[in-house]
Length: 116
Image (tube, rainbow, N blue to C red; front, side, top):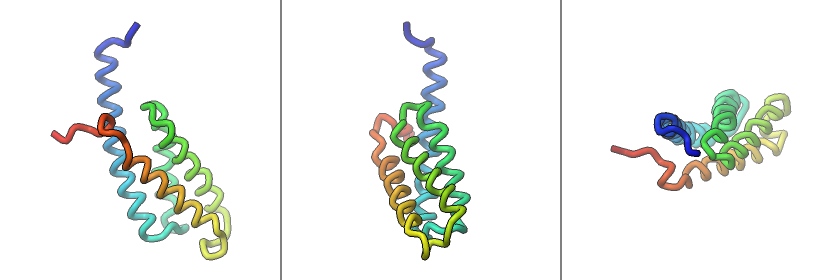
């Protein structure tokens, strides 16, 4: 038995909005990463990753959610540690953020919102 058409339409609209927001958040993450992953921009990185982690699975984008979760967990740890020059895990966070951005950029065309 399939879901009622109205439900499917609503979920598709929500998915489209999530994808649009995810693409925008990718640009934010790229900008933050270009400035250097550091304590000053960690709260914004954590906020974006938390949102992606919490919502991606709902729309069958579990891999994005998993990597966002990894970045969120690592960011929380780094928020309580040494500055970037003294803790190599800051570089690890930068790699995880790059991987997350790559996954978002690689969304198949069927997942991208209509540009009309």
